[in-house]
Length: 443
Image 1 (cartoon, rainbow, N blue to C red):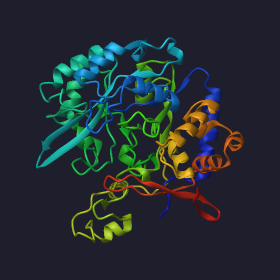
Image 2 (image 1 turned 60 degrees about the vertical axis):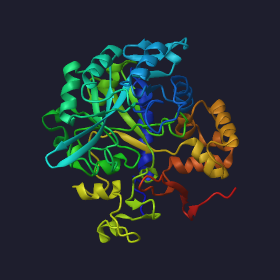
Image 3 (image 1 turned 120 degrees about the vertical axis):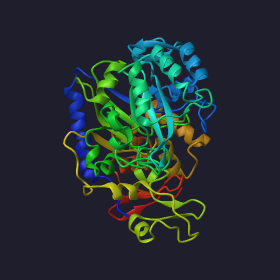
Image 4 (image 1 turned 135 degrees about the horizontal axis):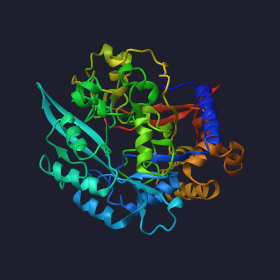
């Protein structure tokens, strides 16, 4: 199986361009931003997903700005208003923080699910919402409570269409940003089983109000670039995290160059207005995502694209239809060969969370005491996780731990082989690729 990514030499060249860009653009602030997470009030989310825990792990990760998650849930919204104070225009920090410049900042954010009939088909789409202030959130909640129970879940189910949702939001404020979540995931996405083949088909006469698409764990920009109708949209990457742990939070994120620390600057980066821009997205390897390949979890079977089409989407073990995969669906909609890059597209890099690299190298769980001890020690020495994975000289990492330094070098050069995820099963690291083949650590 070919690794679906640009060549390592191209990634290194991209990193060089980014380094030069950051040196030359002194008038803008580089910030790692994760715009999509959840709170303890969403289904299947950790009860420890509190503002304090999110801020603590965001700082470990290197995130400057992180979404609040679930801002339409009344109990979470009450907590947000009680515990946060505005640090910069439209960006908030915990009241316990003393210095806004050093604080982890919160962006008011939520996610909603629209379920509706369009023609003869039932559509199920998740949307990420960004808000400039709490007053705007409250106005939107007053409108949404008539089309769904916003108290039932952090990500409420709404009985309205996607264009109707946009109309509701924009009637409150044009500064509300909405974009489809994890756009290729088979379930609850714009291009999924109960979705559409284009943004325009989904949002109809409101499609020009959409400025961004979220790649999701199972796809990366290279894959999205194969569909030319998506060129007009900014590709964003976010963790969609249901846990505060650093192997989930910020596993996908955006490196933004902002004119200033403000909600407006983030909005401009997404909408490509003014000087603010997203210059780089942090991506997991697409194979790592839970729906990269089609398969059946119950049958422990997944199919590579060619095999999937030969099987006509039917599981050879049980005879039932396979859960679709992102790779094969993109192949069905693609009008370009792999490798074509739109002119104004941002760069990206594939990363593996540091905790998982430690776990793989030493054959331990990322959540084990030993893994945490190594993780904390590296953060104390080198600053934060993104600094370790992207910036710290390999020579310095080698003095600390040669095996970890080698693994991080392989990650930086995109020389990682992942066993692909399928039907809700995460992908797994198989090894690192060098001139001698696949290298596996044996601890």
